Image (cartoon, rainbow, N blue to C red; front, side, top):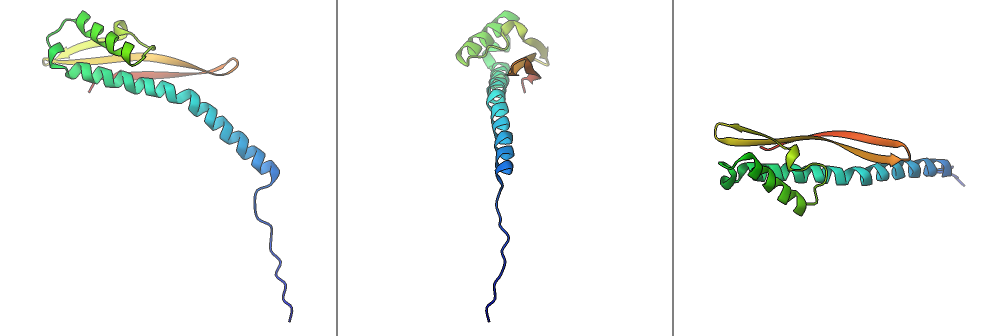
Length: 122
């Protein structure tokens, strides 16, 4: 007895491969554009938290706190905000720092993405 089994071909077609490639390329472009902005946000948040917890700056005036952030921002290459953009609140002998800013990310030609950030010290 000769039994032959018919197998269906499996795999991805050329058009499916092209569509999948385009989608992966678009995701990679968005990722490469968004990652630096989010890294800068985490650096801003880290610096605000470190400054708010610094015991030497608990009794400092507002200009010293802003100057401290400006120095740290220069080291971490933070360009979205400066020391003047920081909102400083003192509650219960504790400093709370916050900053709101918008990052504009150019994607393709005249299409850009605006992301609003709000960093608050813990």
